[in-house]
Amino acid sequence: MIKHALSVLFLFAAASIAAAQPTPMQTPSPAPAKTPTPQQAGPPAPHTNLKVGQAAPDFTLPSDISGPDGRKVRYKLSDFKGKKNVVLAFYVFAFTGG
Amino acid sequence: MKAYQADIAKFEGNDTQVFGVSIDSPYANAEFAKQIAVTFPLLSDIKHTVVKDYGIFNEEGGYGNRATFVIDKDGIIQHIDEGNVAIDITGAADTCNILSHKKATQ
Image (cartoon, rainbow over all chains, first blue to last red; front, side, top):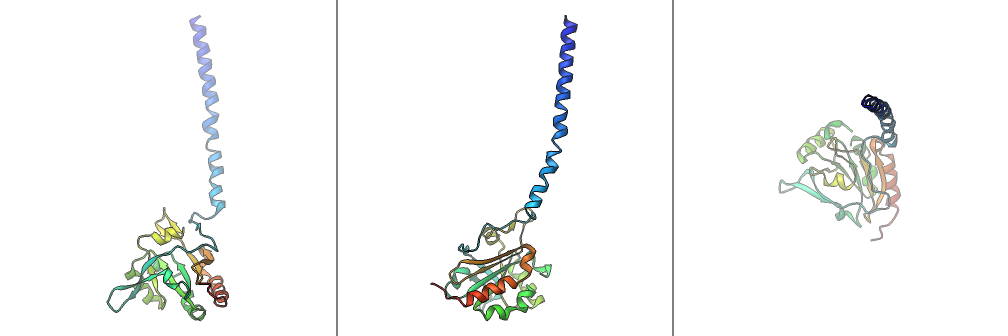
């Protein structure tokens, strides 16, 4: 009786191992399938959430230009409102030559 | 940046202020400006606030993505180029040309 119970237990254990096995084997397969999705969605580089027609976020930033006082001239985007169009050319690093 | 400098007259002639923006220091930018002879200001976003506001900061790489934004006299974004597309300034130049023929509402 004990022997029988043990063999049932063994069978059950074997069955659960067998049942468990396909799971870890299947896990890697959806994973590589998932990987191309972000790649297809675009390059890993971030994309702006701003859209044409939206207000441009204001900022004040120091420039490379030295003012009469020797300090770097600061520019505020909203200072150009009603005066000039502004082109903001974001570049990656100064020494990429872009 | 060199492309903008080469065509700076196209922009300035259209009542447009061009800025280069990077996360480099003002001193690195000054050196860069000297090297490639740019006459328009290069802005330093050392604290990454602007690149984050404009949604082009790469958190993993710790750098700003390449992008061009054209903002009209009302402070409204009129044109966006991102990534390698932003190297070509034609779209930005055309937008400025169109904008210059439009009057600011404010």
